[in-house]
Length: 237
Image 1 (spheres, rainbow, N blue to C red):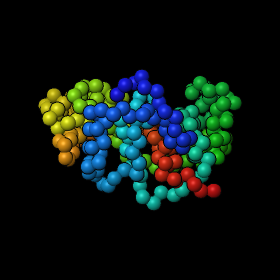
Image 2: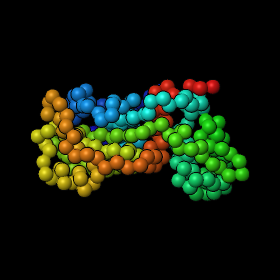
Image 3: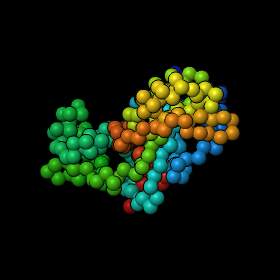
């Protein structure tokens, strides 16, 4: 995909994304996704070319457990700066305003404003220390699957797929069936990247992606918050 294409702004509750360019790779992705049989059911939402700090993955599928409760409307206003602080807190367990400000290179006033937003969204508690709410109560994504589609340049697809492991639990490339061979298989396995092939009528999983724990970064939280908004989970009083 052409990285020079400008992203189109979307509604505030959705990620920014690029307008897909019609062509062989776009057609490959559309046709494959239309017939792909997902393990354990279909994803709750699939984002197309969302803007992430690592680039524009062709597709990001988010799986959410059934029966998730609604969340405060304040989550609708969270931005990337909020997810950076939130992921940091879940990494360290608890902290102080001063330490968060110093480690994340935020002014104390900015840090306090972000923490207040997160507290209103019921994502953390502000006492003597800043303590995040339990992950199982706030992080809804069970799986985040990133997909890169390429008609011929599978090495380029693998490079982007490796970058996508920054936020995804599973990162895959999608290729025409005739492009899959031992070189693709061996390199994908070495990198932990999955390979899905499409033969014109059906998809097949040629290499299973290595699963990694999420949230893996604040990018995982970004995708999580998009899913919360898109799925209409941030609606409670």
